[in-house]
Length: 111
Image 1 (cartoon, rainbow, N blue to C red):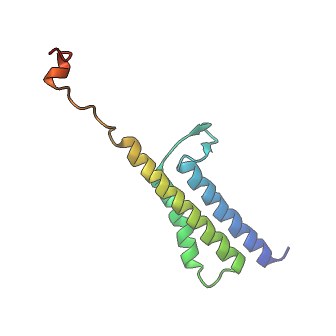
Image 2 (cartoon, rainbow, N blue to C red; image 1 turned 180 degrees about the vertical axis):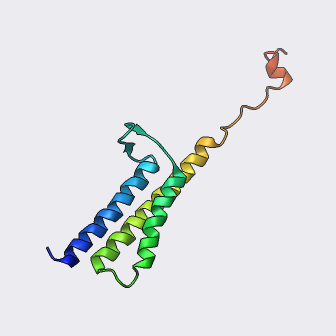
Image 3 (cartoon, one colour; image 1 turned 120 degrees about the horizontal axis):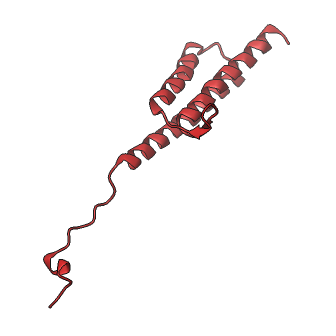
């Protein structure tokens, strides 16, 4: 394996490492340390931002395969992140509240 192939492999491993971390932080994978699903969306955003920064800094210096990997991983992570943010908003939003009973209903509709 020459230096170029080695660097391509190392870049792929780095990107996939941050991808796995982001999935874990979004609650898509169990935390191997605690064996629990945990969600930390702010930390997931950092992991996604790191891949995005690498992609931006390496623009014009990536092979077609590397560009495809970075673009694909970023697209997938960003879509999942938006989905998880929406889920979190729905979980924290109060559910529908029952309507207050009218005086007639409260008395058992005695007519």
